[in-house]
Image 1: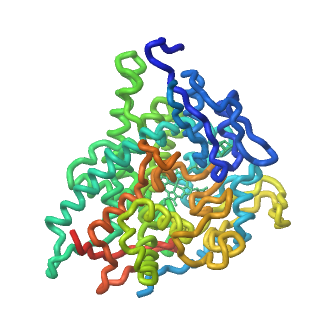
Image 2: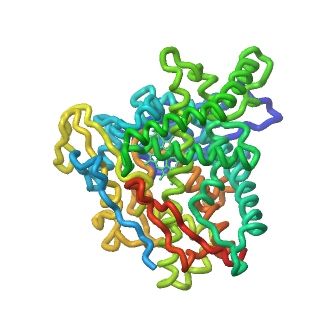
Length: 80
Length: 418
Ligand code: HEM
Ligand code: SF4
């Protein structure tokens, strides 16, 4: 699925709240292309910091809502 | 007036290893070497629900329920369900709730329930909670079901509590849940036949379960009612148990810090006060976990395979080594140590961390976040303080007698400026 040139794709910065993340790993299991867990720090790491692909964004949103501690934030990036 | 409740260890856990330390509890909750150990006696009400399943099945179920806690859903629950109900309830009190002194006197416990019932119905997917009679009936049934699903902490005859609870559940199913489920089955069929768009379906628990074919599990047709019971009770009883403590603490705090009294109508101040109060008071006396193998925690504590341990959040959340020398005291300006939540362990930890937490404390990703929510607890507190709420000087609150919950069964307030 791709968006038409007249409707700019929404882009989001994916951020982990390090005070909330417990390294549970549901994010990685839900959307492995964007999240991985640093097993030593018990902390999620974002592999793709800005996501604008709609299909990928859907998975990131699912991860955001599935994360038990709600440690993931999706912050809109202003379209340039 | 000292209305603070003190923690009493319930006899139900007397023979279990008691874990009091913050670090130990935190490690156990996050560890894959432990599984849920709560709700054995009350299993008939909760077995197979999100709270009592583990592993991949648990993650898949949290994914399935994720739309119930999306930012859009949270925003709607708060602005579309909670705020109109709060306004209505306050208007009724303004019109009909005055005593002989001309002031509004109200018991906070039923008041919280009446403010939250619409969110509870929306999240679970219960229709027809529309007339005053039906609303009252729904609230009453959910309230009574709450007693049965926490039978472990009851001071009464446990077998009787369970029998009563099953009868209450039967009535709840017959009068509310089954008709709501049948409507959703119809809508989901229309969607599957291509006659309805997916986003025209309601976003609620019963719809998600129906979409997933879990409304009628072969061999376990009652499962759907057990999942409903979890969401119905978890979404009301927890807030009803914990919110009054905020008022007790703020009453004391503002006596010694009068400069903060005007801030009780400020959402930011109420949020830090609510979080601090949640650190000190939990909705359940303890959480229980079972070791899946012999475990030695980082502290050296040993827990044997199959052993059930009782996690005592009250001492853990008041540990001076974690929250400072005044950890047992209420201080809304306390700064939580790095990597710890201001409410400590109160919303649990690990995979079973409370799914409703953002609904209660609000969702803010950034301070300027316009789509954020205030949180149900903060909204209710703000409304009460805007109405001039004070604890009724003539009627002290009463602690619950029927269970070991750190909660009140009655909490009289005067709304002096309503
Ligand atoms: C002050 C309010 C609340 C507190 C303190 C609270 C506390 C908790 C705790 C401690 C747990 C973990 C239990 C365990 O690990 O054994 C939990 C789980 C849960 N809570 Fe809450 N809760 C609150 C409000 C809510 C609300 C409003 C909802 C409704 C949506 C809710 C729904 C649930 C559910 C469904 C679970 C099970 C989650 C799972 O096992 O994955 N809670 N809650
Ligand atoms: S699911 Fe949440 S808590 Fe777990 S690792 Fe991912 S971001 Fe952290």
